[in-house]
Image 1 (tube, one colour):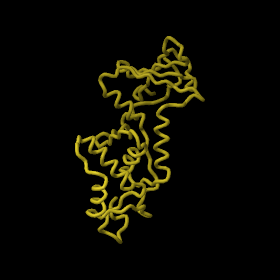
Image 2 (image 1 turned 90 degrees about the vertical axis):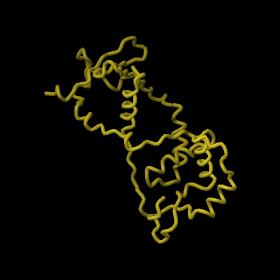
Image 3 (image 1 turned 30 degrees about the horizontal axis):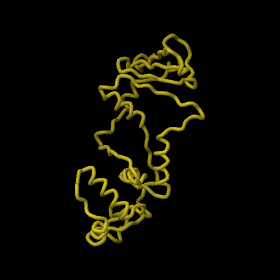
Image 4 (image 1 turned 90 degrees about the horizontal axis):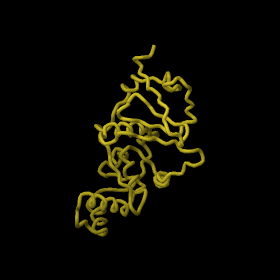
Length: 215
């Protein structure tokens, strides 16, 4: 953490208060494993070096912290990745039944929420650390994105409209609350295939209109 958070001690660097030397050492071991370092230093050597050679301290700043973090568009990023992956031809999206929404990923979300419950995250750089230390055994693998990985989809949004998103290609009304499955095919980018029952053999087709066709 940059030292401008506490200007009265301008020569000191600050580490997030939710960390400690043991956790940082575990992150160091994970980094060594990723980079195939065969002989990492021991915990004792790491602790001695950390305490004697670096002017670090654990501290929770009372100012200069962001109180709000907004994050969205995960589904857009997921779908964009699928479109750019050549081997993916069809995507099936199943809608969970009410009362039967327990998923394996829920345990991951629970571990992350429990880990950050009593911690403060001041910048986006704090999230990778939270994710990595959320589970002590078999820690989660975290891949950090760069600026070039972030796409602006506003231009795409401007080309679409939902004016006829309540009718299928036969003109029948679609009740989105009854949809149980959606299918997206790479060879039919302007059509969404839907089912109102998982047992249905055939899909109902729904065209994705463009704003260019909007009157």
